[in-house]
Image (cartoon, rainbow, N blue to C red; front, side, top):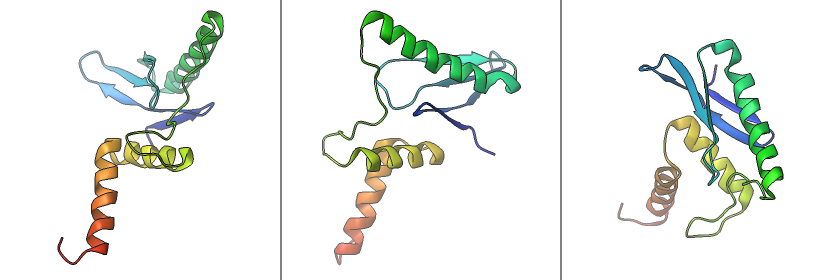
Length: 116
């Protein structure tokens, strides 16, 4: 069982808010802030779908191109697919993208050098 959902190429992590006793999420990997919540676990995925659909409709109405997840640029350039895969692995591990990149680079450097 996972708390990560995907819909139309967008991802979210569902978290429980103990103060409001609700499930919450936000679209990951985009610059715009899109969030949603619901008290009913059976309805949280539907709420996520509504949030994505509403975001796409809003962008259409105002003539804005919707942000896409993980464009492949963060001070260095890598393929968009690798960027997305790394970001999703970080999401599942509960890490930030920067932390995951740091771990990957650290592992690579240690394997290539004699001094860790």
